[in-house]
Length: 315
Length: 205
View 1 (cartoon, rainbow over the protein chains, first blue to last red):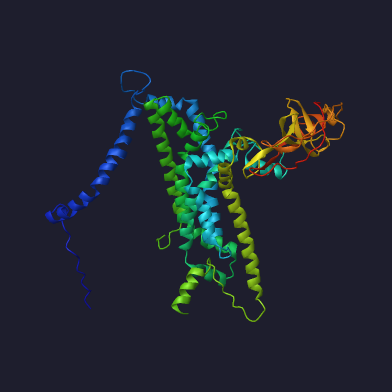
View 2: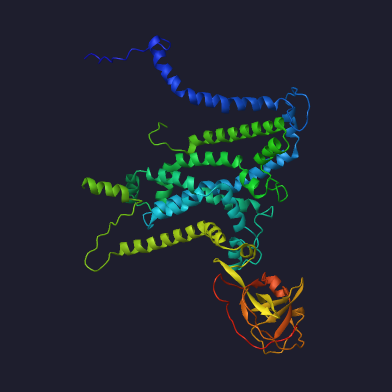
């Protein structure tokens, strides 16, 4: 028996008249985005990289000159830069597990068939996400006030005589900031809920027939099936944590108080740019932060092959 | 299984809110009873979590209704309120809940505020011998004074009575240890002053 012949569509040469006419309209339609990308993203990025190799400082009228890698050398010898990096990493260690796990737990609770009125709860948990950022920070500043804040009043009521000064004590400030960050779980919760809804119920039914309990179902079905969503959340959380600085900027006016414990790397970068107006050094810090974020993200993508499960993917 | 019931199983299946148990007669299957208690527990946890989660919103809402005076003081109620005062010698004295050396607390009118020691007027015992205490070591000493009339009122209220004055350390050792301190008493804005009464009272302590 002769093998069935397969008719393939005739390939159109890339730069033939027909291909070009077809592509031309495509380019016309994406041109606004392309122009915006090059003008407002690519060009500023390249410009800041060029800045790192110069001595632009708006407060000192020195003539512009090429300084090579001096700014990078200055960064390596700058104790405040290292301290601010340490602050960011300390906060990341506390904030990342909360940012990844808490929305997942809340989403599981909201998805539970035992919960009554889950739609209402969903709205209520998402509600703080729509509160304006500065208002939210100020509200939490009041909540964490050592004297009049409700959290310390609650701790007093349950017998803790000397609750911490959350936002004034360097050893408690990160916990305070993480507590404030809990209000931002709304977006993560929605993403997790969408992921949970996408898990086929057949898997749970099959597991139940095999005698799996709730914990086994969670461990062997929910978490593996949710691993792409968890991975996505981790990547976003890492990027957000490394760029964290707006809360301390609003809360402490960018002073880094108490004892430089809120001088995050991005805040130090911001101060170099806009307070000290040292554009070259600020740009250097920005590029180092970019490289650090890229490195961490690449490492995460490298590990993803081991623990992230994509249904239908050949392994 | 019909298309509708299949769809229902999909939506209300493992994670949904389907009511799978069919009631027969008056008895309820034990599984449903377990489900109900689990539902109650999960819903209770969710309610507590939401209450804690949204408490800052409630606080900011209550702030929207309060005066600046009320916002800046600790221990004020959630609703808009004015401080309860006790008029004495034509002056409105703030009524504070003062921790006493014996561990109890009592509402006293602050007559003479001090950094370490304050003088209070006791509005509950206008007939009692006026007293002044040092508060040192939790003990007080008394000294005489003569009667005068008055009554407790809100800040905007009228005159008051008291005959007892006591001088107590603002925060005794024991209260400092337990973190207790004097707090103002508040009554809802627009309501009449609480605990109004008239009696003869005393001269300045």
